[in-house]
Length: 88
Image (cartoon, rainbow, N blue to C red; front, side):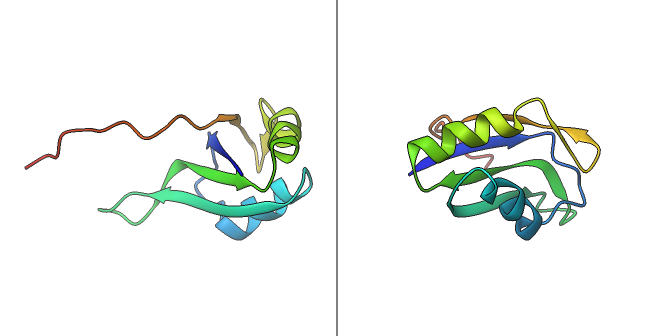
């Protein structure tokens, strides 16, 4: 399993349409579009987990710098989530 960061997503993109786009490169294990808690709108980025290293590499080559629904995507290997102090 390899998790990819996907930035530059059009706000109208759904998890289903993102899954369909990345499935062209290989088996997709999971998809998550990050939503703004206040507005409920997409923040314009998300994560796609590919089932294999080869599928992940194919997805990066297929989608990084390419357009999806009129916006240019940034696709690369996701970095581990950083520990951030809570806002309380």
